[in-house]
Image (cartoon, rainbow, N blue to C red):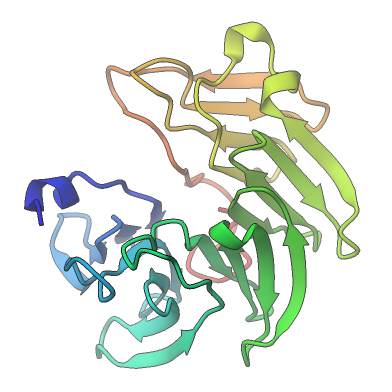
Length: 265
C-alpha cells in the first residue's frame, strides 16, 4: 500500500466545537485536535488491501466527549466512541450490498448525522437512497435519489439533501414532498457555474443556502450562497488561499455545534 497515497486522501467532514477543538475525518482516520494542533483522540481505519480494508468519510461530535462516525467496510458500521475513556458506546452494522471486489467500499456511505431526536440520518450512496434509523436502528424514513451525498435535518423538520450526479439540492417535508429545489446547472448564472457538482450544503439562520464544491483543476467557485428565491449573494472563488471545498461550517451560526440538531452543517 502506498502510504503517501493515503496521506493525500480527502478531508470529508470537519467541525469546530464550542471549546475550539477541531474534529475531522480524512478517509483513513478520524481525529480530534486542540487549537494548538495537539491530537486529543484518533480512530484509524484498516489500510490493508482486501476484505478488511475500511474507510471513514463522516463524523459528528456528540457533546464534548463523544464522536459519532461511520466506517465503510464489510460490513459497514456506525460507531459512537467516548473520546475521554476510549469506550465504544455504540457499534452497529449498517445496510450494504456485497461488492464484487472487496476493496470497492468507497461509495458505501458519505455524510451521516445524529438528529435532535437521537435518530440517525444516513446517505447510502451506492444504494441510491437516504435513510433515517431510530435509536434501535429500525428504518423510519427513506428517500430515493441517484447519488446521495449529504442530508441535514432542518430545524423546521424538513430534510435538505444533495445529489452529486444530478447537481441538485432538494428540501423535502416528512411526506417526501419537495418544498424547495435548486439545480446548480439550471439555476446558477453562467458566470457562477460550478465545474464540479456540490457534494454538501448548509442552511443559514436567515434561510439562505451555501453550496460547497471541490472544483476541478483550480477552476470554478468553491462556495456559493443563494437566497430562498435563488438569487446569488456571495461567491468564494479563491484557489490561491484555499483548495476544493467538500463541506463548511458557519462559525457564527446560532447554537452549540456539538449538540445534535443545533447546527445545520
